Length: 248
Image (cartoon, rainbow, N blue to C red; front, side):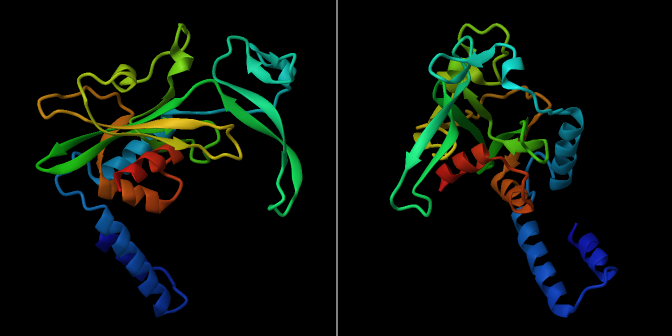
């Protein structure tokens, strides 16, 4: 891979040799983090997998009036909420702060109905850890599909909800029994957009005698491969970055 990219640099006019040195240095950093070793998939395979997942997910967005939303309405106290009380509410806030450049302002904020779970499943192969990541399609992503953690869900949304299919490994992360808990903690969400929201972060270990049949949107990645996609920019979502920070 490196020789192919360097050949491309040779054929590309550059401003000066210093630019080339910077590009070669950056390339070396990326490729050192993408060392495949004994990983189940090469970087080339993972790039193709991510592109295939983007091709399978088409998201159409358009602006509509709030009153036209099915199952959503304004409550008597001024919240925009779902008729079953699930998912989230959009509420208005008036904020005052003497230490900010703007002393007071009004804004909408999301108030989620429950506590979310962000989960990461790991396994060891010849002493090397690998992490189960998913190609996650989400509204708002400029790339439409990003690499996400093993799971990210709010369990309250699935209780008594026949219309919503539970995600892969939902039960295992909701109440781990067959998987080993390595780490579990809580982290706060971005406070300017989510009202007092916290997520439970769980890192679980797959025992060596167990295997999983994976859906197409899942792949085992090494830590170096994940770092490679982080450095590419806009390839790894915020939930994955959040739980990966628990590894350090």
